[in-house]
Length: 135
Image (cartoon, rainbow, N blue to C red; front, side):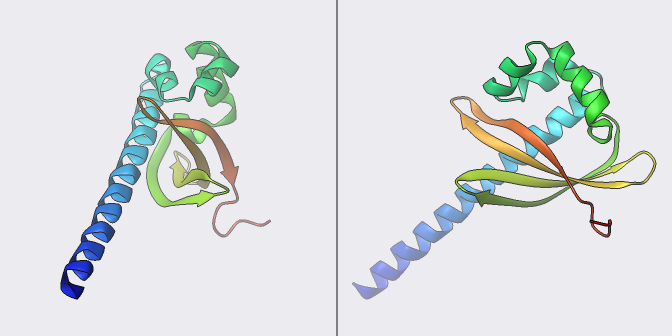
């Protein structure tokens, strides 16, 4: 009986770990797909990765694209994208992403993710201080 309980506990832990990894993979894939669409100036596709509240806020893919080009040029034209940790803060999931721009400057961004009926969507992006920058 004790052996059965241990096996069930291990299986449950493994299942949760695989579920978390799948969730992490989906979140990273969505962010990467949005960045790829932005690099191709495909603002319609990029807009599709935004949450419903972000879509309502900007109204059109063109408005969204203009905001990204002016406010987040490192996301629009990144040289390198590296995913850091996914973490939960006050019940919200945040994916930290390190982006190197074309000039070689490093930017760290925090993507807030929300789960909607058809998967994970980006609900906002915050620019954080890059490693080694003055605060």
